[in-house]
Structure formats: structure tokens, C-alpha cells
Amino acid sequence: MRKPWIVSVVLAAALLGACTDPSSGPGAGPPAPASPRAPATTHQRPPASAGAAAVDPPTVLYLGDSLAMENQEVLGRELRGQVRARYTGAPYSGTTLCDYLEGSAERSLVPASDKAAALVRSLRPDYVVLQFWGNAWGYTPCMDGITHDASPQRYFERYAADARRLTEQIGAAGGNRRPRIVWVLQGPDPITPGRVRRVNALYERRAAASGDLVADAGRAVSPAGARYTWARYLPCDARERAHPGHCTEPGRDRTALHRDDDYLHFCLAPTTSRPKPCPVPSPGIARIAREITRVIAEHVRTG
Image 1 (spheres, rainbow, N blue to C red):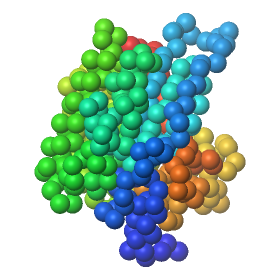
Image 2 (image 1 turned 30 degrees about the horizontal axis):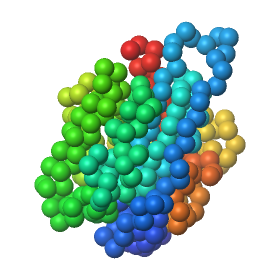
Image 3 (image 1 turned 60 degrees about the vertical axis):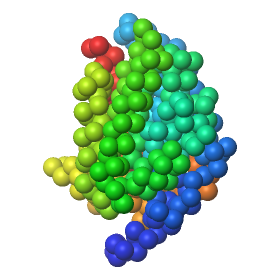
Image 4 (image 1 turned 180 degrees about the horizontal axis):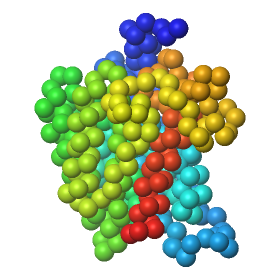
């Protein structure tokens, strides 16, 4: 039986405040800038198979917060398998868009060397994937204390401005080889469902204005026909049924997306004080990674 809702929320807030995400709660303090995440990981593409299509493998850069942190290794495997990508993951837990802006190093959780523009200049990626839940609690200093709870209008105005600035900085860093940005839409938020809906709409408008891409990974972790309804479990899909352990409750043909004590993250392993990629198979992470990969693979084939 599910625990009472208020207990789940309190437990989740306590857990998240000790671990990773900007939506963890107003009592959470920012992590030390020196160790908010594991080191950036770079993966070279595997040798092309004899039957592979004659398309240049893309270079993909993945930036984001704690959701990207837990996803990064699974996304790398999917991209290498589907499009033979050269892949670099550089997420920092607890961050939001402003943390990756150049000029924010003194009050940011991301050092200057890992700002989006700096990584674009050094790696020359074809795609920059941005996955951010949206800093609703003012967890990172670069938000200047602006929170969704205290001032929704200021929060959305600031978030839109940061999305525009980040797009401009990535474009300028790419020069005549501007990378395509992939904005990842987020899954349902059981606490403030309207916030995520507006954040996703902001990402969609930003992508349309700049000729970029949208990956609706949040739909992959939402009930069919109920895009913004939060669920702890969903029916198993064909891929999960085919891989033992990936459909967590095969007798009920359903799989867990979240742990009982964490409504936000998709890793089914207990959280740790030091953020790291998820160490266990987790259906929610796999679904998100597959949708991001599908969007990039489709663009590689047709773009």
C-alpha cells in the first residue's frame, strides 16, 4: 500500500535536500562547488559495423542537473548504439540554466571550464542536450534567490531570459558550426504540476525561435493520455518485458519509475551524499534516454 502522500513528500524533500536537485526543498543548501558531480565523461564511438549507414557519427554534449547526472551513462550507451556518437556528459547536480552561463562562475555550481560555451568551443559538438528540471527553490546562487513559490512571474521571466542567453552563448561558441540544441521536456511534477507545464512550454518556444529540437522525454514517463499526471508505476513496455529485471513487477505487468521515498528522480538505487550516475537498471532512466536518442537519431538521418 502506498504511504500517505504527505509522508512521501516530506521524505522526498529530506532526501533531495541531502543529495542532488534544485527542487529538493527550501531548506536545502547548495553543494560545495568543488564536488557537485562526478567528472565529465567522454566516450569515443565504437568502430562502425559493416552494415552501418554512411552517415558521419555525431558528437553529442549532455548538460543538466541531477536528472542528467543519473541518466548520463545510459544515454551514452544509447547514443553509441544507435548513432555511433562521440559523447560527453558534463552534468552537475543541483544546477539550472544560469549555472552553465559564462560570466556566472563566482556564484555558480559549475566551474568556468565546464560552462556550456567553453565545452562547445573545446568539443565542437553537433548536438548539445539540455536537461533541467527547473530551479524552483533557489537552490543555486546564480538564481539570485528567485523562487517559483515566492514569485512565479519573476521565476518564469528569469528562466526564459536564461534560456535565451544560454542559446546565444552556445551559438556564438559554435561559430559557423553552431550545434543543434536539444531541449528535454520534463516529466510530471506532483507538487506543482503547472510549473513543469510552463517550463516545458518555455523550452518549446525557445527551440522554435532558434531552430532547435525538442525531446519530449517526459511523455515517456507519463501515463498514456495523461501527460502531466504523476505516476509511480506505469505498464511495462515491450523492451522492459524482454529484459529480466527491467519490468520490476512482471506479475502485475507494471514497472516502477520512482522509489517510494523519492518522487522526482528515476534511479531505483538509494541516493548517496555524492551524486553519481545511477548504478542499477531503472526503467524511467531508460525511457528518457531512448527518447532523447530517438530525436537525435532521426535528425541525424534526415538533417
